[in-house]
Length: 110
Image 1 (tube, rainbow, N blue to C red):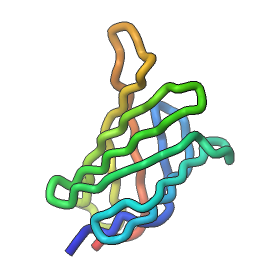
Image 2 (cartoon, rainbow, N blue to C red; image 1 turned 90 degrees about the vertical axis):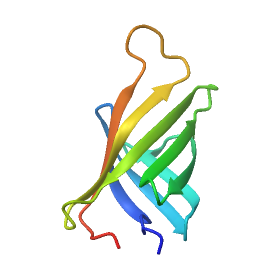
Image 3 (tube, rainbow, N blue to C red; image 1 turned 120 degrees about the vertical axis):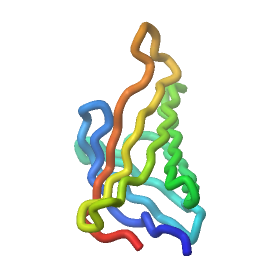
Image 4 (cartoon, rainbow, N blue to C red; image 1 turned 60 degrees about the vertical axis):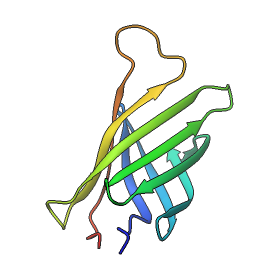
């Protein structure tokens, strides 16, 4: 049985709070919508690897910049499930090129 991660999640991406909505059909992520400050935030696509517990997201911004997110589910507390990881940004330069992100949901995931 595929882990059900659909629904609305709280999001913090490198200190920017938002809401992410995941629409899932079995192991397939059909759509991903993200809002920061109540504004849509580019085009998103995603995939879910149930065996690894890995969520992969790609954000394409209107200026051609892309962000690639990889996170892993932490479900050792069924009443407070999280997915957390890091993302890269195509125009990031310098010594820091990975940024943290986390999503959390108060609902038990089956």
